[in-house]
Image 1 (cartoon, rainbow, N blue to C red):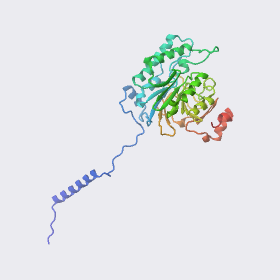
Image 2: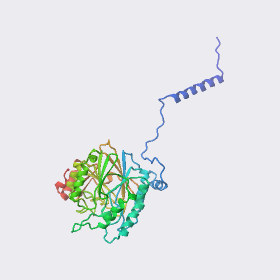
Image 3: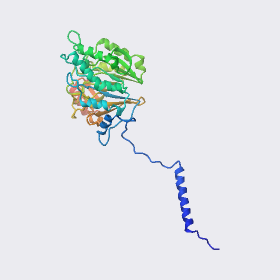
Image 4: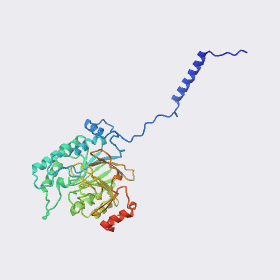
Length: 399
């Protein structure tokens, strides 16, 4: 029997057919691995950014500007925008912060006070009106054009609540003009009011199951009748049915900054006020005035001490780090045990300020504050001793 050999042409045809079969099989195989993109540590806005915003983002450097994972609700929190007394100019960081808002795309902007540069008896009515007009140009009007709600509290440089010996407001004219500005329909801040009580000094509003209260923390004392309104409002069905309660104040409850570590620069009877807020399940107390960023807690109350965008950042008590100008992005996740995540930026460098860069605790004149990721049990014996030697055991005890 003679063997028949295939010609080279037939061999080549068979090989090509086999290759084609393998390629088709691989394409149709549902289990074939698909290429995966590398994990992203940076996110960008979904919409094209305005040129001014894009230029600032580009200036953050090759690593880019971090846009954190978004929560159910996103707030951008700013504070203390003002310059020197009577100023109608703003530091460039104020304009920079406002210009960056499209990058973070918040649901709302929140301010803990000092939007203008008042609290001086020699300022004329024309000067005060000019300051509010400048604020409108730099901050409020851009927010209205962007259709961003603006929740705020009044600061001491906006309309100080300081009381004279006769029981009168020392800066009544500034309070009248601040009220007139905010009650003009064209200056509507765009929030959904619950109770305008004495807007803009005392009022409540809501956003997506979050209950907000703004009280007049422009001075250290809270009148009794206003405290009655505070408790009644916090006990209301709207407040208690909400998924979260946030309070906006200018003065903090406890001291955090050099130069402000004294009575008069914090709310009077801080422990009593905190216990009242805890009783109504207030989650976060946002404040300004001390010009220092410090995310803290005492007892069950979260305390967000805001950095500033305006003039005069201050160092934290006992800290060996320089002060920052900063703003904070707050992402709220209703199913998260922590509920809130802070991403705070040094507005000059656009770098994120990490918790580990900040003191583990602060021992101000009216009580210890713990950084928000530190519990009392985490303090070392040396840290506890340091606090107790300065303040005594009671002010350093676990709340």
